Length: 181
Image (cartoon, rainbow, N blue to C red; front, side):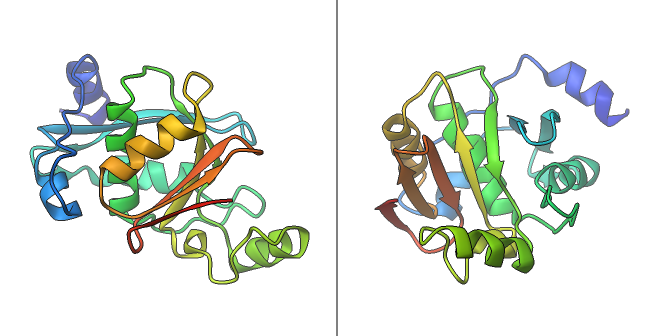
């Protein structure tokens, strides 16, 4: 069966999440039989809506497509995105109970792109987890920054930054922490 066939077969199935576990490993074990991610990029015009995990196994081709989607769009550089970040994003999206895809503002950033952005803004970290493929900046028009941040924090699985002025939430698979940008 092809990946597209699997997508069709499971398109109506929702990812079940268990945010009550106190650590990421416990949380992710309770995530259900499938995991799905839905995003679009205003920068490239690309959209992604795919199941990337079924019955305890990541789908290699789907993860490869996610890596390409989350590339540094400024130079087309692709990096392996940490699967934990993708899981946090997918679980948070499920907790928000929306069908709207995330708008991804930033996924992987090359060191050159990060340095350029850092020169323009003090809010960009010198050793950003974006450069490791461990972070994403996301927006939903149907949910507030606070609602998105609460869902991400319910995962107990990484860092969550609230950027109210720019209307996005940073999610990463680093140390559990939160901040306002």
